Length: 161
Image 1 (cartoon, rainbow, N blue to C red):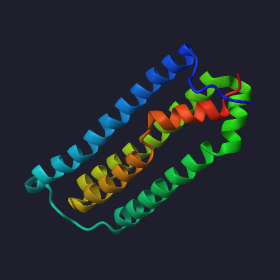
Image 2: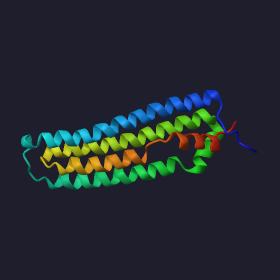
Image 3: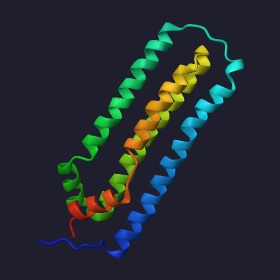
Image 4: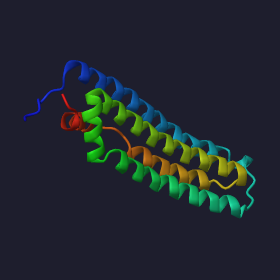
């Protein structure tokens, strides 16, 4: 059974709309994450460093778990069998909604990592928490960035007519 090269107009319009909003959200988070680092850099004179071993350990565990968890979540949610089932049960629009929700959930994980680093910096006065968490958050955000061609290819491959 040959798949058509183009999606139906309604499906293509929905894919374009949801992709644009998702990409805009991730772009916004990609701008906001370095801004947290800039705020910390600019406010260095107002931070009073003091050691807090419990914050240090918590930050390390938190960043590792959420960073690796985002990879596991993406691979699980975008597994071929799962997408095939969603395409069969909900059709093309349901598949697009799933792509959008999963991508936004991953972006939220990246934002939570960045904010947690900023909070740890405010608690301890150590800017490395914001810088390190910001770096991990940017990697997560770039990892989950949606490309329209991959979404279109996924819908063409897994959506049932």
